[in-house]
Length: 412
Image (cartoon, rainbow, N blue to C red; front, side, top):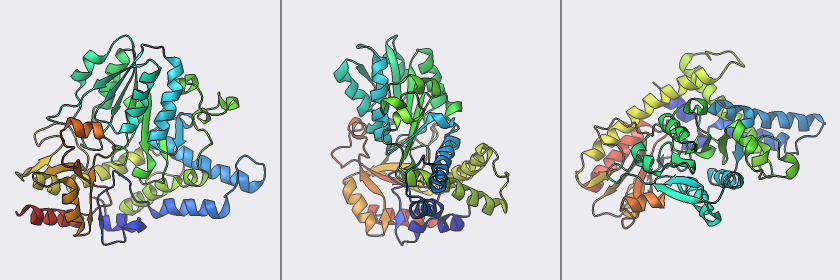
């Protein structure tokens, strides 16, 4: 069981009376990340690649951040692209893949994803790519593999879908779906933004070709990671200078990475190390050891804690006749993460959030850049959904405050 007092002590921004429930939109930073960024800007704010010692040291710190992200997703260093955001990374990926395809080739997108994994691919229709839609099922707000089957053909080149929707919280069986997509001769591009803050990520085990997530929603700075399988990264068309066409992953990083923020990424592992040392009284792995087992342990702790944290809120919402709770039902075998969305009969979602804010509770309302999903679920007129997105640094006391405020609002 996580020591929540220790966890919260590592996040300076949590020293506030507000309960932060918009973590799927952006998590706050552990002090270790802040310290790494501050140190770099104070000591190494210079160009990389020179021979003088400070430039060499700066390069080592930036490379350390890149290595940390490769370990985070279980990929080779050269397969990890670091960019400003998932939206930008996927637009660059779409532009880099288009020259490999012919007019009439097909791409499948969903209407459940964040627009980052829909818009860039839909825009390829302007150049002759056929775009098909894999639609969510309104009764469950989830995707089903059998609904993909009729969309696949010999012309399918890519299927894009989300690991965990940022408006539902259901976790899809990525590995199984990718195997089916590969049997059809297509590639798979997965949006992992909703998944990465909550569970261990292993792109090799998933078998994905492309996987993207935002670090600023996973305890890091405003950067994003895009995994591209090496063989594909070698083939895609460059989005950087011509002389970098064969340099991986630089060919998809125009303008290079942000130095100070990339250097700060080692701070995520610094935080994980502190978390493990506190709970085990000592780090269980020697310096330089494979971090995979350590990440497995930590995310097992996170998963257990988050399930306990979310349960009272989910159970309360399910019992309210005026509340529509989105996502897997009580009898569903589909796992869900602590991204909890709902609407209240007779109360627009902005009104619900405004009432909760009077109690210094900070959820959020809207479509969360997934307007197609909100339309498909018939929730436009009520202002989208209310979303309570928890992180492992939220406390049971905060959730209890939220339930109490909802009881007052609903009159129960």
